Length: 139
Image (cartoon, rainbow, N blue to C red; front, side):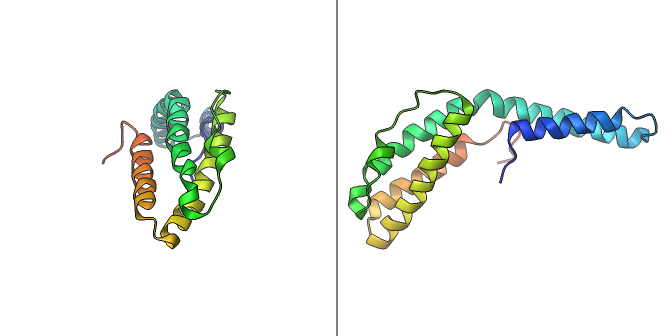
């Protein structure tokens, strides 16, 4: 599980408060400030691209769910949805529902031997991982 940006910011606020105390050892303070700076950079990058990534993932998953008939499943309601509410909380909720359905679709495709659909699901999972890479990612 990845922490959300608000959770990271809340933790950073706590670190700032603790490091404002006069009895904090300078080495501990420097370490905390370095970690805080790195986390703020990551949070800024994630926050800046989050809406675009969620919309891209949702748009990529819906056509796969439209192919659910190949497995006997029906995800028509999810497959025909759209991302009209661009608040991050709404996009994330839609993404969570779509990804849960994608897991179910993947299992059904594997069980039914729908190799083309299974390959398409794997391709999207790989693409999704690539979309989530950060500039600081080592790979």
